[in-house]
Image (cartoon, rainbow, N blue to C red; front, side):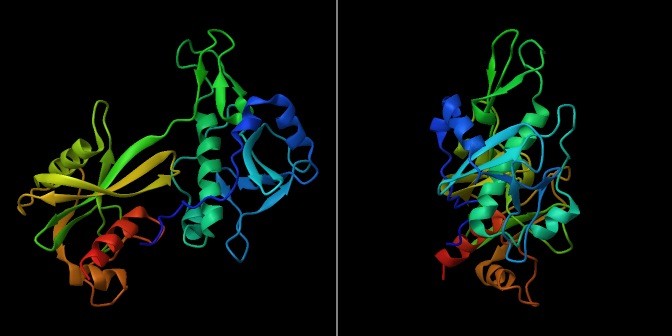
Length: 290
């Protein structure tokens, strides 16, 4: 099975440094330390899909410790206080997503989500006081009520429904022409992964499902989701789409999925991009039956 995009990170996140100011200062003083080049939240990539880095002395800012690449300390800069994090993905980033080296993609995912979180959480959720960075950038603390806040991860289920050798895929109107992909939705409070999978499939397509099996996960840094990929056994194949969520939903055979994954001109739909876990999920389903 192809590894999902943004996975396979190789750096040492070095949690010990987050708790020891002396260790953090040593990393900041290390002449080998490198700073991730970001334009807003967008990285720089070279011709080989590697991230761009510079020295700590070249750009001012509040440092967020990412970890060690071997013995080299790596940092990113928080956005200046009061600067709003750019929403969504820029056209420039869209053009880069399939060029990343896997390890660099994983590192960028962590850095982007962390920078974005700081930009969105400058005030205490308890009392509204401006917060201060601590734990080397992996938390914010309130000087007034002393509440501590940490980067959040939002779980999202993304899933296929399977019925008699066919798989259910949906289409959103904003997607490129012809693209179909897995259904997806955020977990709600008080809900298991399995319950969320069944609920989301029923809400979006009207298809009832039973057993659910987990396949893989993926950090999705737009801004801070964790995609939980699953396959559910459908109990019926009748579709009633939620027009507020989907433009269309259809059942596709394994052969049709194979054509789409191979980018065959005869394919009845366009598969999701390779960096998306929907592609991983669809590939795993296809290969299971071949």
